[in-house]
Image 1 (cartoon, helix red, strand yellow):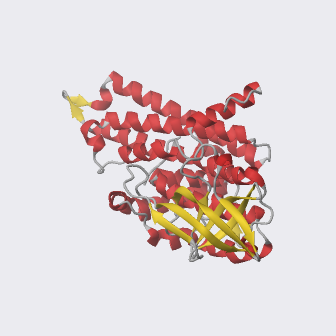
Image 2 (tube, rainbow, N blue to C red):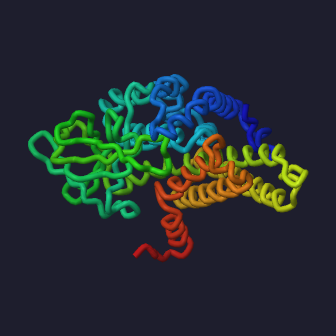
Length: 386
């Protein structure tokens, strides 16, 4: 069983709930997911048979309250994301999309009827959701979205295309963002809606153990009661991404830990020139840099959790953590791959799988460059986006 990376004795400061949540998810990943991930990564599929188990463990929307939801604290939620991504970024993405990008907007912006209908089903895994914001030509600039909604009688007709949608081809409901009379609004678009289709995106070299789709809306007829009544403007959509980015900042730590643990174990056992690889100065320097970077990322995530729990969290602080921890994890994964040498490119080991996944995580939900400009604007008061 994985023991974790804890150079600064963070364990001693964790509350009982945080330890219980972390250990429960760690055990699930170890026993249920890791034995399957290589097969699914090769096939480009997600192990859907685990959905019910994850629902039973309370992983979906775990930090939300009411409607039978667990309502765990934000530190426990972060550690949950960490352990899921230690398994694979695709696993953490599945849970993150379900909770932060589907259940959260319904919980925050939905009607009572929408909450009662969807939240219990999504929490149990009986229903799967996806989040439709990104468009083919408007990834980093969601304000430029083309998707439109037009009211017609008691319905809305939605037209447009959404791209790179996690869970899109298996979702029972999609939270789709579209411009209605010039203002961005959120709609619940159900599977089987006339004019709505989802097609799998094939040929991915990253996040292969994850379902990714293109959503096509051709005057898709959505009932008026499926409009999220309290979601107005791009700010509502971005608030959902902020919830997910918090989880990503923690999740990236899990990927980095997995790579470091594998590299450390490997270089202790692998012998070259009559001595363990771990006995060479260059290798020890790499290990020291890796554990330092991981520890810095842990402390950053811990403070982020405290800020979120106390209600003091700002979006720019989440941007800093997402930007820093994901890039850190990507560098750790690359270094670990190098320590493993030729074996590092084999899927018998996990570091290259994590490395390839993190290339996507570094890009989605705000690229490294976009979050750089978010921080620059916050620091200077000058918008450099245009």
